[in-house]
Image (cartoon, rainbow, N blue to C red; front, side, top):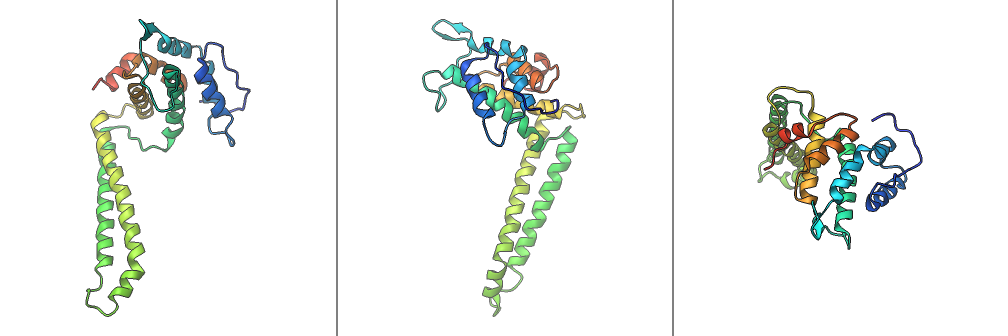
Length: 232
């Protein structure tokens, strides 16, 4: 995204009303929670019009890609679903910088092993600290009380590292063996595919390709996304 410069929120007439309402809601947060440049791109880029047209297509008495009835969807589940997809795109983009990501399988494996080893060392240290004095020692109870908080913190930290190790293991199953320099794009498109499956019960590869291309100021093909995130 280009440098964030505050600008009036101008919403084209072709943006669905529920999406426009969600954009206004997000833009009115104080302090601002959404990048103005990202908001402008997702609202004003003409490629996004195709996404909303696709999600508004009718089939019989319903929609071609009907949205599930989500909590709070009210009388317009389809509009609610489109607004949810819009909001989820912003969340995925803003959270991308804070999520652990790996460029290739070897990098994920190295991180997994490092996290697992450190977690093991922390748990060992916590156990040693807890068992430093025998239970029949006259100062045992006082020692346990004085160090119980440190033992808890060590075990909590170990738990966090073990979770990161599990994420590294999961990443190994998805990433290519070689570095292809597209971890961020894979992360964002994978998130969008997952969101579309949850809301519309289908990955919507074509829509995801457009949304990701607009959000990332790139040109990501539908075929690439299909290869990265096959139907499962």
